[in-house]
Image 1 (cartoon, rainbow, N blue to C red):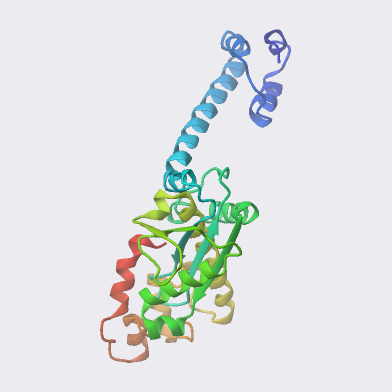
Image 2 (image 1 turned 90 degrees about the vertical axis):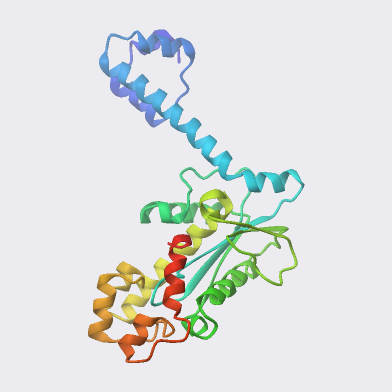
Length: 283
């Protein structure tokens, strides 16, 4: 685009070309727009510059999220897997884990810890991750395993199953806040990893969206509890439903509020307290 062309374009055409289609704007054209007597044309320039600043900031944020991966890539490792789980704190439903290996040049705009994203953005990113990942997997630990093993070890089991489900063998694992036992490759545990590593954040999005979808399906099987809305978490609505309906087959019987609803004594080492402590690193 030449500077002399700008004056012949309407403000609507400028918006379509520079904002909707993202055509490049050279220095001379930028200067011409800055001097344009039309307020609308100058507003288009303001929005172009704002987008440019946002793109730079997003690029810097993504580079920061890739510092752990970058160190491993620089050492010659290619298949770096991120692993995370969702559903440690709920009173009902399984723990679901996600794992993925991402391409080195993958930069999904807007990716973040799944807790920081709304549902629509999580679902958009989950589909993008699945399309672009080298490989990905989702796995779970069932309610019976949570009650038998306790929620912490059931979460570890789900994470291990997700790693085992990857089509490509990882050369290194990035794990949110823990190490998985008995795996034949090195691992880096990262506290708050879903906010500090792009690959762990991607795994957390896969886990969260898969679990949310599953709880919506289970809401149809066990109506009246509101699982599609609260996903099994200990909300006022969920406590009210437990009081009215009692526990259903997908409630975790090792958690105190469920045991109360069943008229049972609290279990030794109440796992509900452990689940509440896990909220800080979960959804």
